[in-house]
Figure 1: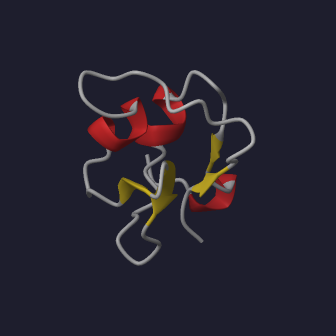
Figure 2 (figure 1 turned 90 degrees about the vertical axis):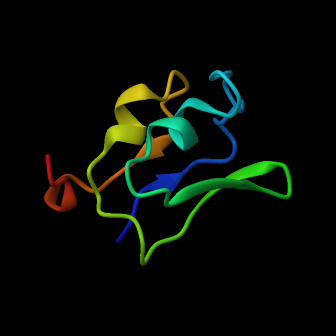
Amino acid sequence: MAAQIDVEKCTMCGGDIQPLCVEVCPDQAIRVQDGRVVVTEFICEDCNECGCVCPDGAISVPLEKVTF
């Protein structure tokens, strides 16, 4: 299971160009599509970099999957 985005909590926070989670993802598994953040599950490596930078607490990775 990849990182999960709670769209109700996500405010599309401001990074330099995109939301912080998109900018920080080392695998480019997160993108903005149709005005919301989405994760490509087969690319996501469960590193939780996105969850660590999310100011909204909108991203979760099941603890048993975290690879950092």
